[in-house]
Image (cartoon, rainbow, N blue to C red; front, side, top):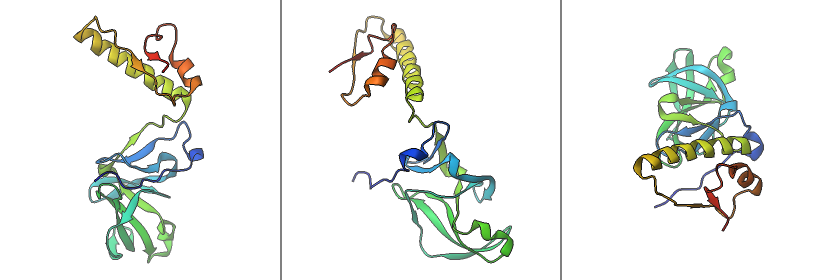
Length: 177
């Protein structure tokens, strides 16, 4: 069947210290940690985030008038657009003046999501590659110490990143194609 079309945030939104919030089931990008307005929300499954904007979600049926601890709201449940996992809801309307700030905002339940580091900066990619290399090296040395396998570099690898990754002790890791 394959993946459905997936949206991503604009590149300028992926700042180095921003984590990416993804679906637990399929790892589809849903939100950036910089868009979390509050981590003090509760849901039926436990803790939840109030967020300003999400991507890759679809409405789950009709709007529902729902009583909650802080009042009555018109909400629409949301699902992951890739795997259809229920993620939370969209506040469509608040019937309480003091809760109007929630209108148009999303609640995503922490039980159905997790955060991954944003590896969009070169420094973060270098750190992750070195950690992975050390893990591979320790795993390979415990299995077989005679492995001379060389991993090819994708032709699209940024030359600056390649120079950073191929250091004095790492020169056997990558080979130019």
